[in-house]
Length: 163
Length: 163
Image (cartoon, rainbow over all chains, first blue to last red; front, side, top):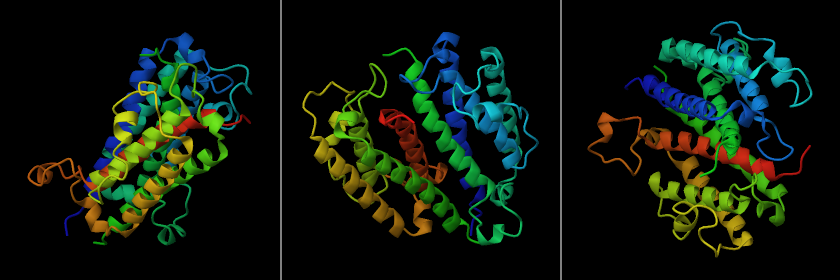
């Protein structure tokens, strides 16, 4: 039988790459003022979602066993706490830059990982438990995080000019 | 080598099932009045997104070569036209019912499709072209539609009570 792993990995990586790229394009179109606004009255601000997505993708570096997280200080502010719970946020300039470097770093590791390695365990399941739950692999992290990104991109797009 | 197709299909189907189920739960919590509202000022109304998602999932029945679409009349209103372009929409009751039956029908077909069949072509690529682009298979439709659903679920959730 043909080894279908490279094909699976391509499908999942293509979907991930498309979502990240669409989000970067959207962020490039939004002014800092627009990113400071709420996506809908009383809801999260764009800046919180930008920090949240960057923090989640940063965590993926460890979850995928690629390397240590780059900006551990983002997690308490943008994952553990809701929007407005922490008064002093990093600057917009810094967050935009971290969005880019975290995603570039992640994609660089992802592209270099051999297809068979994607079907090994992610960091939150032990080597002992993994054989019983082989779907808890690194590729599954990529699939679920792609959906997570799409979910929040659907909100960020509400900050853009209409029409 | 182990046949990894069943594992990959499980990962993709689990992600699809989770998104559909989360959307159904959300819709169950939203009153008809809430679904009539815009997700953000000047943006799509919930009823349009409900119709849009139902229409897109209905199209998947044909795209995945499962069966003919069930409600072809939804496409001109909820895919080809933007919100408010068509004045007379189906009733909320009917749309909610169609959301359920279309997704139940789709999931029923999906669960019965043998894993190897997921790696065959979808309806929008010819048998001649498919060998050159084997990633344009039925499973890839499921992956991309899962992201599409997550994108709009991120918007529908803005209609719910806060907190």
